Length: 465
Ligand SMILES: [Zn+2]
Image: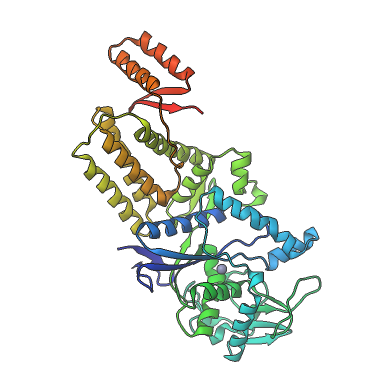
């Protein structure tokens, strides 16, 4: 049984989707006014881990992620650069998709853009006006939070004390400023606007997620994710809009991931500790898979403290898994199998899945993986592992990596027989303590592009391209 911590109930709950075997997932996507920073990618990697794990457990998943290509920030950015909104956002959208690929984040089924769904938003706003949840003021339309009794149920703010006569125009504000918020904003000098049945203007940020989630997933769906920053006001407002309009529950499970900080401090351009994914990969030469490993290896509900030291440690941890996989894939083991290996593999797989089923407890899952590596390494060291065991071990690691997605795809390596014979001859020379011969063979192998490393777990070899 899978359990998730649901922000809505404030509790860990057993997970069961509305439609058996199929999960409908909505995750808030990027606002394309700048390159995405590593804090944003923390959320996207967490959502990818969630999705991959659900698939690993046999669920089908339909995933929708919106692209916010019209809001206060994109309009400001386009104006500052003297570009149309479309031209301004196009490059950031392209970069966003490239970055997702770099981090091996599984693509969503739909990436609806706000500017492509204005009529869907207008229809909901009209409905909210008709039902009395919304009102007009100076050409804009606002949602009346006093009219929606459930307001505050996600973020746990007490909306009864709020002064309903006050309104907030901007898309982002804090809990202290909870007010009636804009669904539709009257045109302003120099800003893009759309003609519509509710008058000219542009949508507020919150309405786009209510409109686009319903369009692709229906008015009620299983899981909605985002960062903790989204709980208020964004997700609180999504609930108000959607439930007021459709008269039914909006989302069953709300999962939120915590902040990413850098060296113990909030990430900020002014502090010089602000990193986009490209900063890490292009300027700092970080391995994208180590970045992914770092982003997913802290439990999603804990603050993730990014540092270059942590990245180095994660790189080393990742290399341990990669080297191990390389060895069980490529080293020649005697034929046959050992009776104790299937139980080791089954236990590792079960513990890995149990860990993730416990509100995505990644630490338990990774511990299961490293425990597996340790136990199999002991067998290798004692010359106990057999060819079938090695093949099944490699296949399990690859199966677990369908969830983690940090390992390189399998490369078929065929070592020529003459090199294989030299490897065996060198092993024999070492056993005979004929180190001169062993070193000579090692040099010959190196000249052929095969590097041998003597580690505490035995000899490993690598092929240089
Ligand atoms: Zn959203």
